[in-house]
Length: 424
Ligand code: SAJ
Image: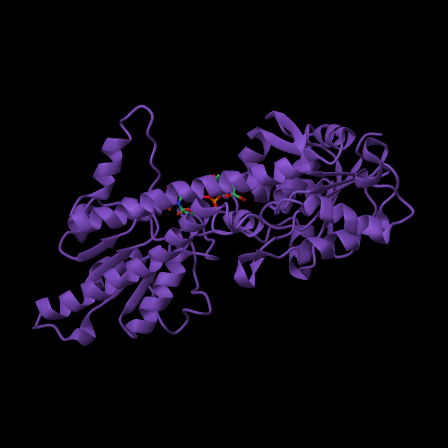
């Protein structure tokens, strides 16, 4: 049986583009979300998130009648679970949203259905999910019971797309397919081949889970190395950006970039799923997390010293008139996503330490988030360059890259991204 109807549960940064991709290949797609506003917006042919090119694809899919969003699950041939898997107290994985999602589709399941967990998950989560389904549907068989003969096929196929390039990467990236049986994998490959041009690489569910976590932990460890270098170089009076550029000219060295810390919902979260399942063995992965999580405090201390220096240096200017401008609030360049952003953490802390002194520039938003409202002043880049005594460059947005060196040379600059090649 081929897949006529595909249901995607969770219409966020991954679920919505995935739903739109199936719809663009003329599958009937039922998108499910608990957020009534998201459902409404999507059914109007619009999107509730920012991702290049996605608006056009969703619009075409909805207008063409291939994509429909709903609050209540409906029967389908395949169900894809793409809900968040955050961590809770103590950096332990929280699978409650996955559980709620699979229990909501459980009553719809019929023999021949395929259920895929796309959400990044700790090792063993797919088996757990299949166990929850088996508990509430004793009338059906599952792969943990009868392998490839199961009524319901179950797999883990983690998404690996980069926010900002989701539409292209969904199609072009290779896809890891971790079936709970050979048949589960074969059915999943058949489904993804609807739109994936990359290779579908078949493995088991546990390896697929670990592969996704490994990719992000590998990047986190790489960034931690770069962040550690930035602290060492600061101490030794060496320009870390020049250092990395030189070292990277070695044919087998490729050091990532230091920054103000690691943000986003993936790289700063996923390594903890490895740590929680093997805490004694995952020593480097845990240390990398701590190094990256410690970077915002280091930047905040730099700002405090710069402020003290500025007060001491300019006796003619009242300290009350000093302005600190935080450039960038998003978690990375050229996006509007402020969640889990080290730039936000740093700006909020500086605003608390220096009330009345802080300006913020974020070209991708028009309104400050609630926690900064009334505490910092959202200004344009020009205003910040005119008014600020101290510039804290937090995000490598293209607007900031274009700033001429002459505009910033006479200010105290804390350049966490090495954009202006002034900082050590
Ligand atoms: N960062 C640095 N230095 C670097 C690279 C990144 O400080 O050299 C920082 C960024 O500024 C940002 C954070 O790391 O705060 C993460 O940004 P990112 O662009 O590296 O990654 P994400 O979180 O947007 O997306 C990652 C990707 N994973 C990998 O590249 C291994 C993506 O492919 C995954 O699909 C995504 O996580 C996910 O959903 O898991």
